[in-house]
Amino acid sequence: MSNVLVYTLDGKIYINLTNRCTNDCIFCLRKDKSDVKGQELWLDDENSTAKDVIEQFEKIYPETPSKEIIFCGYGEPMLKLEELKEVAKYIKQKLPSSKIRVNTNGHANFVYKRNVVPELKGLVDEFSVSLNGATKEEYNEFSQPKFDEAYDEVKKFIKACADAEISVVASVVEGYKGRRLDLEKCGQIANSLGAKFRVREWIVNGY
Image (cartoon, rainbow, N blue to C red; front, side):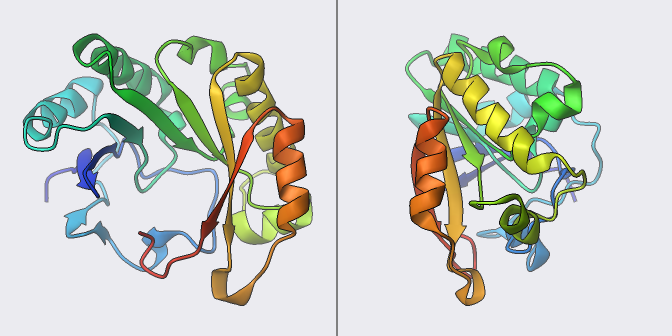
C-alpha cells in the first residue's frame, strides 16, 4: 500500500502528513476505520517529505480544484512542521487565492518548546484548534493527552494565533455517545482567547 498523503472529501483537498499524535481522542475516526471514503489514511511509514506531498497534490488538484486546502489526516499535522511549512509555501505560490487551514490539537508550541505560530504567518490562513472541553478534566477525558499540561497548552496556542492576527477557531465535539459539554462555557473560553467558536456534532463515521 502506498502512502496517501493527499486525499479529497466533499470537494476539498486534505493533506495527511503523519499518523503520529500527542492525543488519543476517544472519538477519533481512526479508532474505528482505516479510510475516509475508501482512501486509506494509515501510512506505511513516517518518512514522507514535502516533495512527496507536492507530487501527490499536483496529481489531484487538476481533478479536484479546491478553494480550500486543509492539513488534516490520521495524525497531528504540526508534528511535521517543516514539511507543513514547505507545502504551504508551495501552495501559496502556485494557488495564491486558495485558503489554507490547519486542523490541530494545539500542542505544537509545547512540542517544539517555542512559539511556532509566527513562522506560519502568511502561510496558514486559519487554524482550527480542538478545545474539546470547558475544564482540564473534561478535556483529558475526551482527548486522552500524552502530557499533563495539554489543556493549558491548547489555550495558549489559541491565544498565540489570535495575537499573531491569524484567524483561529476553537472547536468542540459534542454528543459523543450521549456526552454533553458546557457549550456556553466553552464558547466563552474561546472568545476570551480571541477565537471564534465552532460546535462539531459527533458523527459516527466522522464526516
